[in-house]
Image (cartoon, rainbow, N blue to C red; front, side, top):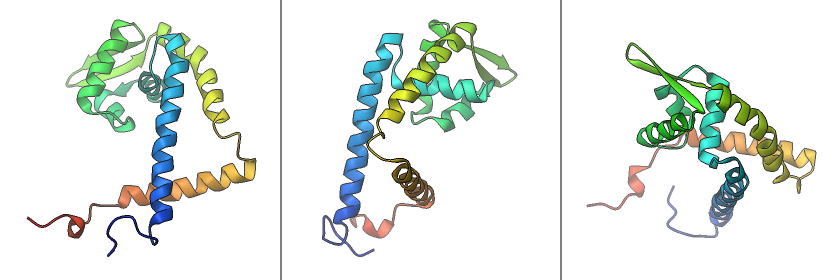
Length: 157
């Protein structure tokens, strides 16, 4: 890769990246507006959904499924535990997290609403376009997982 900055060669790729970033930011903003009526944030919803799927889930494993730091996970778990949405149980050196009855009731109420809302963000695309977009995003994600920072791109000291 011998490109430097915004060029005609990489213009489309950079615009896609910017649009994805803006879409993600706007989607989170709207999700937070919706979820505030249930007393949670989009990040807390994500955590509760992951706990619901994988419970009982080890705290370190849970952190791998989320986009926040380990410290952020610990802080958020403490808040969700205080709200009695989750319970943490220590088994030897591992903390396992599960939903409480209150947490499960919240997710049973919120999950369909949030799912329908997120799906509505893509209603501008027909079914074929959504399938095509999903395929492209899956390929891009897999590529990004294998991607490393190219040291040649960094300034020399």
